[in-house]
Image (cartoon, rainbow, N blue to C red; front, side, top):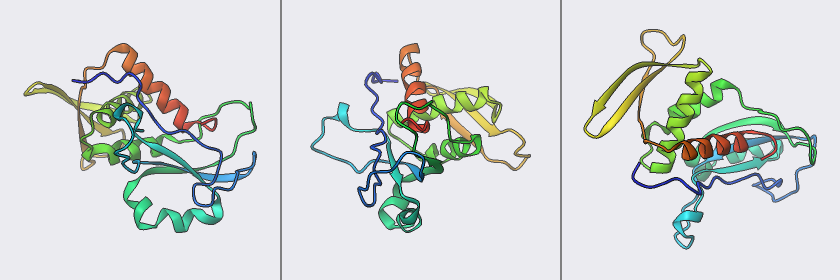
Length: 185
């Protein structure tokens, strides 16, 4: 990867409904969405989030989800509950949602998102949700080809270039993934 990923920024939960700005109460159901951020040319590049995490009151979720602006930016979503303050951190996203996120990031060109996708692919490989069908050298890149486990012969094959992350960068991305997908946010 040509630029280091130190300071990878991923938006965190605000504890408020993104549609109404109402405070979400611990224990109440909500929908959490991982979306591409609205570009902010005023923000320094190092402060721009790679992804935003938005939480929604269930009463507003369906109309917001299908609205033009969010629908174009939406990568994945899941239903969860607002955690108790200081409560135990849990992962509320199932593996199918993570595989769907991996697939949706296929057309990304942003280096940070590509690095995120590569680490997500390795996590899904470790969880035995993806398998490697090929690794090859293409120009200056090592390209990994993944396929969904149990997907059959006609299942799509996803290619992702190894961004040559440092161990620290890979750990930072894995930590960010854990943070945005957990109920602690």
